[in-house]
Length: 74
Image (cartoon, rainbow, N blue to C red):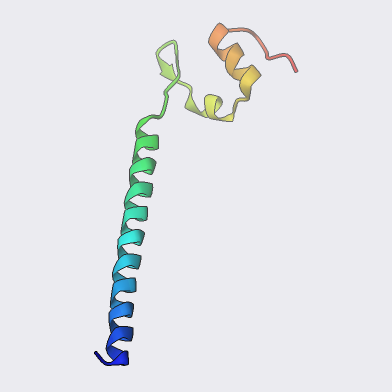
């Protein structure tokens, strides 16, 4: 075979490997993102969603929300 044929073959193989890696990476990333979106926990208090408060709360505030105390100690 001629040397330029090896170069063309190498470029084709590297291109195929790169495309396969990129598509597998994107597929994995998309599946993890979808799983994380599905696993969202909705906290209810008296049957009403309180997502905004829960997302903004720190650990102490979350504990107080769960045990229904007035204010989290700082």
